[in-house]
Image 1 (cartoon, one colour):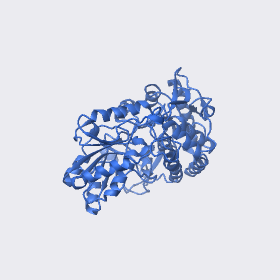
Image 2 (cartoon, rainbow, N blue to C red):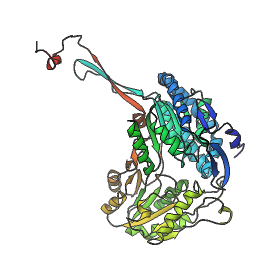
Image 3 (cartoon, rainbow, N blue to C red):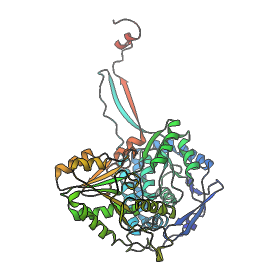
Length: 505
């Protein structure tokens, strides 16, 4: 990576972006962004206060009339310019994302950043297609049509596992539909969200359309969700925190979009391509060091393939290279923090009492000892009701369980509170179609696991939340539907009036 910008210089004015300007927070408390690969300081900044949130919301409210009043074509043009600016700055975005998260640079370069640019380009086109139902005379005496209108100021909260992509998923559909937004990124990973907002200004988007408040969840986050001028909240994060967000949002009757936890099943039938399934399981369980709510976490393998699958996955996991996130040969970086690494390790250590750790299950030493690293881990022999099967670990851990009949496999796949994503592996078309129908998840892949595309929606069932990110479906989250009805008769005393007063003529 050449010409890496200096983070401390870039954010010398602070880590709040309000009304088009970087500024310092006013909470009186600071936070330090840590490079999880080395444990070294990246940036120390002042956290946002409730007053900072108020100013950001006020800026968004001032910007709303002008931005929502722009034509779809004008918003589309601005987003096309935005995508071009992001493409020009792709290297800086990839560097900053890997620095604050610890993800391998090849993942940031080939997945996070190009995915965000593509998402921006998609919503640039989608901005021109805010369509309602065609005009028609449904009652016979009236012409009806449906308008889709921007709803106002959106207050969104994004997680730390994909800071850039999640910022884009929150911001882009909201502003494409004509809304303005205040986003609170996770305080441990604010860099690329701030850069995203700065890039929008470079592209010519008006000040106040995108605002970033970097603060603690209990102060800045809860104040944002409960703010009376925020008309919608979109949150991505754990189910536990999502419940708290819902409580606050409900108290002020806000529109609510929740993308919460996951515990994705990876269902391998006995006619599956074993080599494809094993490779897919390793990639899908280890992406972003397993810190992905759609990552494969529970592999259910029909008994004739179970032992061979366990052996092959363990063999492949041993080839995964841990190392410096900025080395081109690194496959797996650290977890986002030492606290997260220790949380993951705790799950594995407790599992040793009731299951077998087939491979991994340890913190590496040597040159990696200072970072938040954890080896790829495969667990077998756990019971369906055990902690590692039912709880979201959010680390590089895959649990494998056997099943006998197709009915049993699908039932086990559905046997958690979550329903965000899943995959089914089979050569049989009818078997695969049955799995896609009966597995309770917002996305079901067949013979693959993880790929996402801007044109298709992302969102869950059950405790994984509700609402959709990406795709044209996301406009349903960020627009108000209005029915407009015109009388066509010009008759003063209408026939239906007699139900209220008078008699039929």
